[in-house]
Image 1 (cartoon, rainbow, N blue to C red):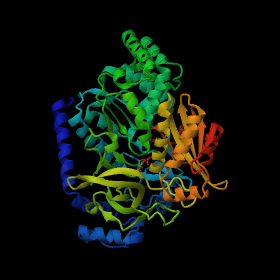
Image 2 (tube, rainbow, N blue to C red):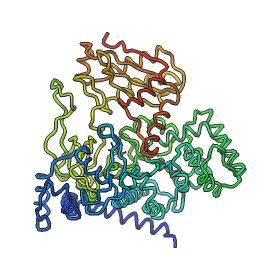
Image 3 (tube, protein in one colour):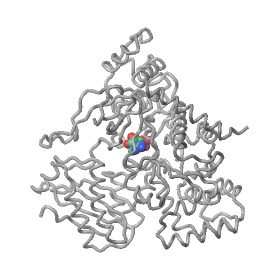
Length: 592
Ligand code: AMP
């Protein structure tokens, strides 16, 4: 029997109560969680290497915590990679976990040019289900939705493949969408995705996007909210809708499926759902004609009149898509989704009504054991080319301080021990006794020629300032990336822009100058003044260039759901695409 809306309220209440309790006792819970991780993975090769044969079962949890952080060093992915490789190659001995690892996930980024694998276990799917249910409970307190409704989800699985040792590999979202937990989530939250599995897992993101849109419109009156993992996929999908709505309306009118859908399984599954609906097709057609005149402003509430909100990760590297998402969402609330990584989920958004710019993530202390490396901005005159921060000793979750920035360190149930995630966060407050984190940026510097140090966040701010000048025109920035060119002397920054609409060269020249002048990093400013870094270059690439980059990522086994445009690249394949597609170049006149 289907549970009623009342049962759902009860379940929401229960999961929130559970979280309040663990948050209230966050320090204690963390110590217990570490004890549990070490207990279930006692004797694995990696831990033995650092902790020897210490009988942890006989230790007090708090003594074990301090012993662990004293004996086991902080690790990067490169330190764990030899173990993960052995697992991928079929070594079944207990290397990182006692439970055999049968699945590996592809995390974003690479280690020395190789794709980064991390272990995936049923714990990963269980925590995904748990955070989704928790986040849904908080959302439903502010934006209640009708039980039994639909969700328009722009979600995509990549192809799963086998490693040399026969393990299943793919992105974490792919594993999750294929898991039992994904089906349970739909039942538990009583909201069903519009698209069948065949659409989510087709492996062809263009065909999947078409069908997501088609089915989303077929069920348009039932759609309660619209979502994607990262905001990029949603913006991408609605941009596609601007071009294909006529075909979609024809399919709805006649109950057929466009010949652009060639995958037999997907065709069959979608055709089973749709049937001719002349009045719906005419209504959508009418609205799309109106929207076209309005440059598709407020597209979402117009086409999905019962949607209560839009939900996706909009922070960090997704911030540049926020403006476009707001344009599509009109007055509809946009709710920023939770904070996590392939390695572990981290925090939940407990304030869904906050605008994405103010969103924080309350750390869930049962998911992993979290440590935080305090980070301090360097004295501007101190020139290290490695990083922009100096760090002090890691502290446990219970000792983080308000306003302090930290790098996140994880010890997980999946066999990562004191693993540096590489994300910089700031403690913005507390929920009971667990910290609420603000995501700041990836720690790694992305733009550096010599003594200059700029992070993704610095680049984002600069591009935002430069592109503000486009508001005088009817053009908009579609996407951007950058490259520190050190092949020619003096080295200089190149920023690539894809623009929609026409802009005079004079204005683009001003945008270029504005960006150059907006980097505030002391090393950059000094180097520009002395010309040890040359003038910033703005390269305009032709329409569709960033789609080619996305296709390149997907061609390498990535999934649309997890795609994040690289904000800086030295990857030769991407640079070749960018340079071949460059149609205009501008050099900054800032600094004379
Ligand atoms: P992946 O390794 O592909 O799973 O991506 C995980 C990374 O995405 C994290 O380490 C963060 O850098 C970023 N990320 C995930 N969630 C958020 C969020 N809510 N806000 C900002 N960045 C996020």
